Figure 1: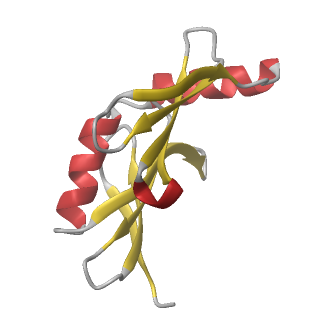
Figure 2 (figure 1 turned 180 degrees about the horizontal axis):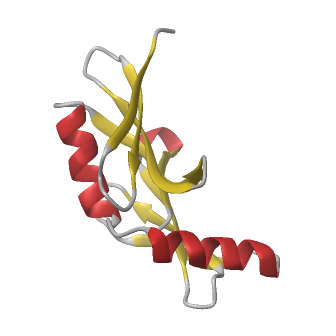
Figure 3 (figure 1 turned 30 degrees about the vertical axis):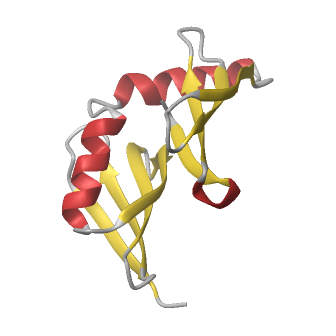
Length: 125
């Protein structure tokens, strides 16, 4: 899994997974039941994009479950609305948007290899 984010008012999770050849596949999952409601649908990625996806997945020693747990520990009680495996400043990171009960939004980034929290920015909007 490289990306998961809420869609359609939080009723659907849009999930991006990467196959062994680096192709991203999109799967839509019912947020309540966990049932697949659409997909998988292959993205049309270039060979360079496929290589980038494979490299990120290989560099991520933490899977999405471990990353989500660190995010929830960093912002206790908040709901994750998006979790994304990405590259930042030459390192592979998990980035997440979290929303607290009072609607305060956090953007948290952790190192995907070590789990170190690199930033926790609060959106003051």
